[in-house]
Length: 262
Ligand code: SF4
Image (cartoon, rainbow, N blue to C red; front, side):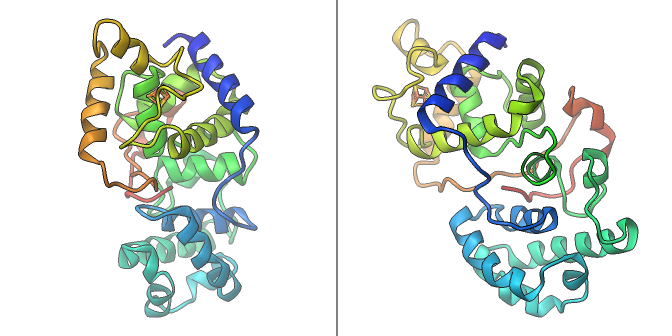
């Protein structure tokens, strides 16, 4: 990928939307970890409604590690997949208490050791709670990267690697937020507003559509997928980690663990 395209996209989106904050409410890195686990296949709005009470009841890893499974399942029921999510939260909280003295590990490698934590969740926590570079690839980032031409891959880890290779680390978390907000507003999966889009002049999707049709296989795939998902929500994607790439490739052996993350 040309670094010029990524920088143009970043600058344009930043000028349109301004700096974006993490969409999930939290007071601590651990709370963001829990919120990100809950956000899989659920809207951020719903997660924020649930965590407002949840974090009053169980504010930290220790309290989660000692809470009852049934109580927790009931408390997070409306987020969907409540059994699996409760399981991931309980196991992660216990591991943090037992192996990390109650503190969240501050590195990608450490975070990936936690049960139920995949690369996307770890990137969210790194970028939005620990002040470190992190580029989470959710469903919007994945879709827009193909449409715009930021990556030719549909593999989240390769997308992460492609974009991080050409953008400064201090922009990674913000770039992910900007792509997400653009995906939610101007470029939803079922009705992208290309004529009104601020990226129309540089987006591969519009360029390909205007000239010789859809040249990019990634773009073709995304358009087909968008049509199929006409009724899908703009929530979250899965944590899928299959192979490593730099910087993602450096953590290859830690691999994926679950489909959690926002
Ligand atoms: S030009 Fe169309 S496909 Fe490209 S980002 Fe904008 S709305 Fe999405």
